[in-house]
Structure formats: C-alpha cells, structure tokens
Length: 319
Length: 245
Ligand SMILES: Cc1cc2nc3c(=O)[nH]c(=O)nc-3n(C[C@H](O)[C@H](O)[C@H](O)COP(=O)(O)OP(=O)(O)OC[C@H]3O[C@@H](n4cnc5c(N)ncnc54)[C@H](O)[C@@H]3O)c2cc1C
Ligand SMILES: Nc1ncnc2c1ncn2[C@@H]1O[C@H](COP(=O)(O)O)[C@@H](O)[C@H]1O
Image 1 (spheres, protein in one colour):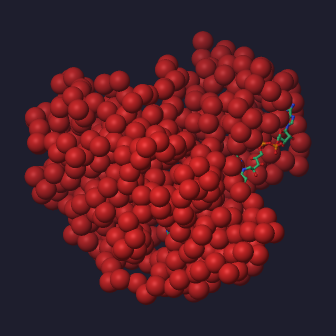
Image 2 (cartoon, each protein chain N blue to C red; image 1 turned 90 degrees about the vertical axis):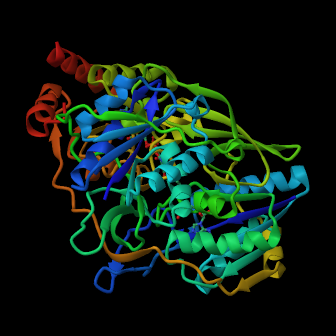
Image 3 (cartoon, rainbow over the protein chains, first blue to last red; image 1 turned 180 degrees about the horizontal axis):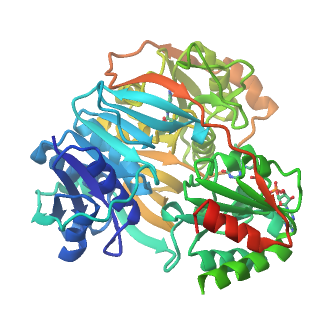
C-alpha cells in the first residue's frame, strides 16, 4: 500500500522537516512512497525528494496553492489519498500541517495520530508512539481505521539522503473555490534566520539576560553554531523577543539535537517545550536553578562572562 | 452573535505525571485540574468580544461530571451558560463529533478552542470540527478581531505570522497573545453558581483510535558540570562525547 507524504516548502525550497517526513515514510517499508507538493516548485527541487526515499512526487502546481490555505490544502490532499489509494499519509508537524491533517483525517474517514515520535509498529495492527502531556509522557495508540494520518515530530527518524531521483508527475485536481473562503492578506516572516522548529541546534535566553540589548550574546553564539534562537515566556511577554521564539508549554515545542539554555531558571512549563531535545546544556549563575536537573551538561556562571568565551571557543573550533 | 468556547479539564501545568492500572490510566492522585491554558486564552478573548459585540458565550466540555468545577470556573470568568456532553473523551474524533453535534443545533457564529489540549496535545479537535461542519478552521490564532461578520486574524507560522481574513462562521484554535488570561472576581464566582450548566447525552460517534498504554520518558543521566573558566572542555564534550556540534 502506498504512503503519501505532504511536503512543505519555504520560498520554493523543500523544508528539512518534510525531507524527514519522506524518510519516515520510506522507513515504513511500504511502497510506493509518494510525496505531494502544492504550489510553485522547480522540477529539480521535487525530483531531489527521491534522495529522501520518495518514489514519485505529485505536483499540484496551481498558483492558488502558493499560499497555505488550510481548507484548500486539506481538500487537495484528500483527493491525492483517494486517487493514489494510499492507506497512510505522513506530515511533518508544522503550523500548517497540524491544521491540515485534522481536516484530512475527517475527510478520508481515517484515524489520526499527531505528535508521533517513532516509526509505527505494524506487526499487530498499526500502532504508533506519540508524545503527550507536553512531552512529559508517551502514549502507545492503535489506529483502527483502514486509512490513517500521522503528524510526525522532528528527529523521529534518521534523514535518508541516498535515494535515486524521483519521477515528478503533474497532479492538478479541480480546485473548489469554496475552499478559498479564508484569504491570507499578508505574511510577515523573518528572513535569513534558522527557523526554530526546524533547527538542529537552539540557543535560548531567559530573563537572566536582563534586557533585549544583551541579545547579541545569544545571537552571536547561535550564529557560531548555525543555530536558531529561542527564549522563555517572560522574555516574549516583555517583548524583548518576538512571540514565535517563545519556547515551552504555551509556546513552541522543540526537539533539536542540542538545546542551550542561558539565564533560564527551568520552570516546569519551560521544560515542557524542550524535554525531547537530545542534549541539553544549561548556563546559569545559580547552582540551584532547576534547569540543571534536566540538563546533560552545565556551567554555573555569569552569562555575560561565559557566553562570549563559549562563542569564541566554538568559532575557533569551526575555523 | 453567539460564541461557543470549548474547554478542556486538564492537570495543572506544574503536575507530575504518573500512570496506574499497569500504565493504562492517568493517575490523578493529588493532581489539580484547570481549564487548559490555551482554552483559557480562547475564553478570555470571547469575554472581550462579548463586550465589544454584545455576544453571548456558551462554554462546552465533553467529559464526565468531575469537570463541573472547571466548567463553573469558565462561567465565573464570563461564559453565560455551559453545556457538558456526558461521555468520556475517548479520542479526538469522538470529542469533535460531540462538539459538532452541539454546534449543528445552535448555529454559533464563532467557535473558539485552544490550539491544543495540554494532556492529549492533539491540536486536532478544531480542525476536525471545522471539517465536520464544513466551515473554515484556523489555528494557531494569536490575534482575532471581528468586523462586520468578518474575522481578521493573525496566525502564527514558523518564524513569523500570517494575516488571515474569513467571514463567519469559523472555528479558531487560540493561543497567546490573543488576550490576557482573566481571573474570576467575586461577583463572577457568585453569579456562576446560578448560571445554567446543561448536561447533554452524547450522540453516537466513531472511535478511530485505541489507547494501548502510557509510558514515562527515561530518567536523565547525571549532569556533567564544567568549570566556567574552562569552556573549551564543554566544546570538547559536545563535539566528541555528545557528538552534537
Ligand atoms: C500556565 C503557564 C504556562 C507557562 N508557559 C511557559 C512557557 O511556555 N515557556 C516558558 O518559558 N515559561 C512559561 N511559563 C512561565 C514559567 O513558569 C516561568 O515563569 C518562566 O519560564 C521563567 O522564565 P525565565 O527562566 O526566563 O526567568 P526567571 O525564572 O526569572 O529565571 C531567570 C534565571 O536567570 C538566571 N540568571 C540571572 N542572571 C544571570 C546571569 N547574569 N547569568 C546567568 N544566569 C543568570 C537566574 O539564576 C534564573 O535562574 C508558564 C507559566 C504558566 C503559569
Ligand atoms: N473534551 C473536550 N471538551 C471540550 N473541548 C475540547 C475537549 N478536548 C479538546 N477540546 C478543544 O479542542 C482543543 C484542541 O484539543 P486537542 O485536539 O486535544 O489538542 C482544546 O484546546 C479544546 O478547546
């Protein structure tokens, strides 16, 4: 049975998280793996999804799909499920994919599992492990319907990069104008920075940095590491940093390979957003800060002293 | 203008999570329950809109009677009446079908939910309800204004935001900073006691998933502390031991 993967792009470039989703589908050992891309992409960009394990890419290139209109995306993806006869659809978690997946699951009368962190166990039914209680626990859930939709967290599977290039096919179903009732009138997006949910390394700062003028410390370390920058909730509440950088229970949940927390106390609500990181480093001047209990490595010290030295050490390693 | 706010009854954000009955059930011993923080944002925005638009607010919960104090809290914050659909929240689709059934009866102009529940973390119910009612569902919404039956929203996307406009009716999954959380005042708490909380029996619904068991993450190993004067050692550990840089 074929597996369908919704792939998302950023300015015509397929996101790394989508490449991971294709790798996930490939690792499910069901074929063919069919990626579906909506909106404008170059042929080469789509064919390259073969490296990640796609056998075929369906391209719905209508310009109306250049914007991520939730309802329209859900309709096109449901049609793709029907026309390929696929039993499973895989999406990398994202703001758009989360919103679309739920609608698709209803439209195809399927089972939905969100926040999936591992490959499914298909030996006895179809079971997946998902993250619940904001990362504080996991649930093993069986998907009972004949068709299913999975939204997958970052780092759930090794990125595959050795496949042959994929065949790209035109897939242009008739669009239903009713699906475009919601119109996207403007988009504000930071350019050139590493996106937080995509990042393999995240450097985050908390109230311990004293003010937005000191964020160069975080930014320089992040630049040295090729990392994204994050922050604690009070920092975004006080508008020292934009809201989309706020990590935690009520913010973004990240699962990078490396999370570096600087001047963040480690309140349980903050930890909830970072506890699926592979490695956590904490820099805090208070040896009693609760974050040290959740960390793999730590430095007890003043951020204003330690961080510039760390940045310099990373830079000299990289050069 | 009629607003429906769907609320969850979830463990307080500081709760320690544990399971019982061979890891098949949540252990609620000593756990305090609250309105889900995202639902609380949805409710807070509804209360503001109520004043602006002369709207009425219904709070809805799908679940057992143990949630009644939480539902009363929503009434104290500013909902006018409440409905509880009396069925355990088996899975997201089941919950969504119950919510959609209530919505079909009542024709709400605006259905506000949290972007996700903090127990199940599905982020699913709003999209499912949107699909079941065949109306737009937008999430996560960080700003919401209503002008002439058009919702003007700011939706969070990776690394930024998107401005979205759509005419009502609509389902929105809310998050901060859509409104400031509201704390019930004495008058609210008093009046909540006499506001109607209607208990409805569930409609027949599908269950498409079965929870098999729960588990806790493995305990973290001991932390390695590095001296503040020896950051090179940290870099060395990250490169050669953890292999993450
Ligand atoms: C329902 C709810 C949801 C919440 N959701 C979130 C969430 O999603 N994300 C989130 O982050 N918080 C959340 N919070 C808030 C959370 O409880 C904490 O208040 C918050 O995380 C604290 O932020 P902080 O660590 O930056 O600040 P503080 O707690 O003030 O900690 C600052 C830290 O910096 C250290 N420090 C000070 N100076 C220096 C220095 N020079 N060098 C090094 N270290 C220094 C201090 O020792 C201290 O540990 C939530 C709270 C509630 C009630
Ligand atoms: N049992 C429930 N009763 C009422 N509303 C719910 C229930 N479960 C979820 N919701 C709503 O749906 C939103 C998303 O939930 P979820 O899909 O579980 O993450 C929540 O923030 C609530 O607004």
